[in-house]
Image 1 (tube, rainbow, N blue to C red):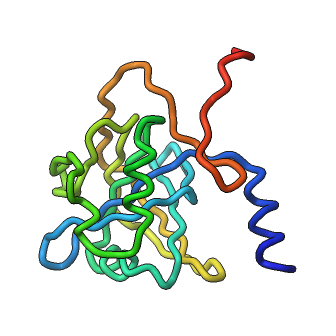
Image 2: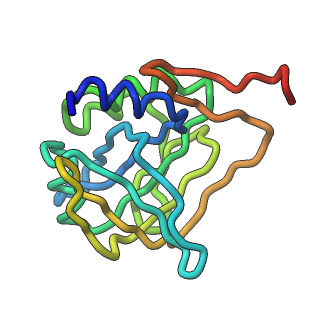
Length: 162
């Protein structure tokens, strides 16, 4: 299977956009954009994220054993783009965040954020699948809409059919 054909085919599925945050071993914030995220279980509350094996964030994430999933709001496309770049904690320059209950960076203005502890790590081709147990939820409230990714581009909900 041609990888680009596969990527374009999988791009037919609209996904939400998240920024996964964690801390390095010195306590500095790290993060990366991810759309490979899903709810896994209600009891216990679990989610999963898929992280490229070559991601610099993965090494630190595995070392700390915890991460925060920040589900982005439609106005946060620039945040998604900033965290999609390579680099370390400079991704946080100009980004408003606070320390959550576990000390993890929780981004301001998101639809919701979930602090998790890693329960298991599974092999997944060129990615690792991190199963996380939800520990704390941060939901600011309001009627915001999600930032979506579809066919390789950012997208919004079509309210015409609602």
